[in-house]
Image (cartoon, rainbow, N blue to C red; front, side, top):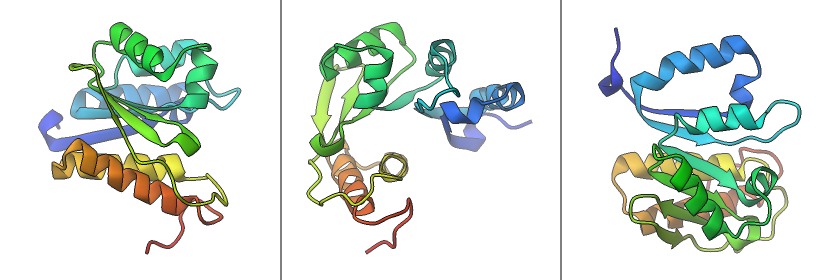
Length: 173
């Protein structure tokens, strides 16, 4: 039987739980992973507040966009939102918050520190895949042991590249 030491991370999103069997399978994976990266997806009709709250309760890292946060909890500044989520979900260690043309930030829930990533420089052609690229880059650098500023700079650069092309997977430079 596998244990948490055998798996590094589980990356999951709300869309992965569109049916009960998928949710049940995901539930079985949570105890096997020390890093549980939850990417909130708000795509009607495939989400509910109850499902999002349940999935949040299992995560160690949350990735959420400003638009998704506004749907869940309107009228908050990013700082208010991050603090509220961290207060309610003690299991979270980090929150990666994306803000489109305003860049992104990482919130450390233990120290309550915000680290801002560089703002995108490219003119967007399509934003499809930018959040996924940012998330993958974040996990790569986290497991590589990169410091937070280096991680966020790399994440921002990759997301900035992805928005310059149509489609979610442009050729890398």
